[in-house]
Length: 231
Image (cartoon, rainbow, N blue to C red; front, side, top):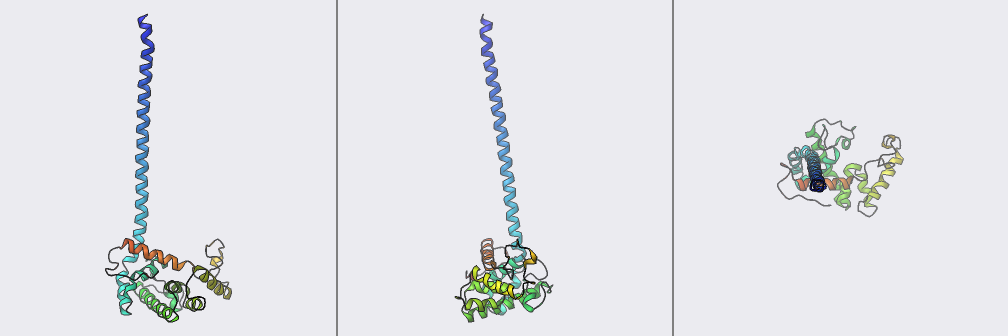
């Protein structure tokens, strides 16, 4: 009789032990999965940061040249601004990182010397700055005109003197209507700019964000003195 009474207790003890082992097993599996997830998250975050910093790095290597060219025209306080223009134009890549060829009436990427590209980019920036001040438009209009041409300054001057994406769209549409075969977004109606295919109506906003990014990251060789951020 005694032996028959002990069997249920023994079975319960075995069941408890089995349940404990399973709980421990599941706990270690969950711990492993959490640790793996945390590692993957950190790796992804590092890749994002490296990607952002590498883009800034490409531009940062040109900032001493940008600053030097701006000093020639007494606009060195706009080093971050012109670096942000380069970031938007090319991320510091290619032979014409300032995409300045068109400001000379040439085809895109005709310039294939970064030094000459920066010289012309700074020269054109000075032109739009000077004309923008003369026409008393705001700074975002000046930045937008680097993309859309000095004619955009005239347009804004007649329409409130302050840039907006709506004004940029209207100006773009005027240019598109003049030459629809050229300014058609490559025939891609899914392009976010369509049908405002002359320039990029979001250009000024994007440059402003680049200015913030460059200022926050402040990579080596960028600039050691206060910069003018007029947005």
